Length: 398
Image (cartoon, rainbow, N blue to C red; front, top):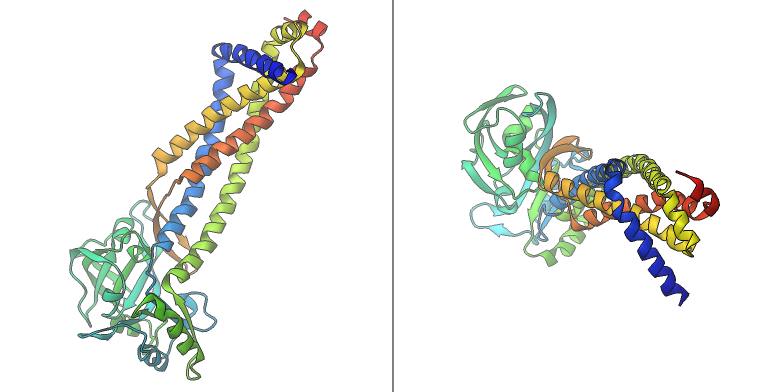
């Protein structure tokens, strides 16, 4: 029976506490806003990592693979000679088209400086030289203009890159290195990595950067997803070459993991530091609340209310304020940032990639949960003070 009695007493005290909230709107509002700020910032930063992981995970398909030099961890550190490329393209596991043969594109990847439309500063953009097979390997569509012509100084631009940088409209001219390029089309890769890139003919790009017949990677479309194991075993066991074979999805997922971990660490540190500040605000707010109700608490104690229900009532009030603040912060993060497009540096290849913030239900729950933790600890010490307050002394206050 004492359990039910204690819960009843806690409910009574909690109701009394909440009824006095209008008299403490200023201090309570500060606590709510503090919690909202912590949650909004934490969720927004972590949604960057979620957006990058989603963008990378959607790049490629189960039947596409990427081939690089053994020991390379990215395209930037890989070099494939012409003999390597010939061996790759001869693999029977590669799908073939009647007009162009094996669906394998030997590609070059370089960084070029472009001016960002939003800030006017320069950033390292991705310029990729591809072969005709690339258009049948990648999943994308032209939304404006046309494909570049073979052997011409022409570029097509990903949708995100076209919005991120200046001077990339169809018909514009762009000087890169010693060449002047004409933008002839814009393509949409469905929010995946190629959307942040500029594409041109690999045969035109190679002499510009003195690459000769060498390339960095070969992207291939296999006859089926199940053909990957045989394709990988064939190339890695061939004594003529030293090659590394990965599914395209696996390759980009690895890049996303490194980048997202960095963002999560940064976001967690910021959330922790801001949380400490919000914790102090909650402690001060609840101490003020206890102080303003000293006589009420003492009267209830004198009437037989135990200390436990008093502690619980203070904690409940603190956590209610935390939930309100956490919910408000979560709403700000979701409606203010979910789907917002931005760009960041991909440290694997030192180029800029575009992505969309992704505020997931799990992040919203994490934010509100963090607010609850702060509310719990913020109300703990004031609650203990309320319980330990001598009844006689409290009745003499105010």
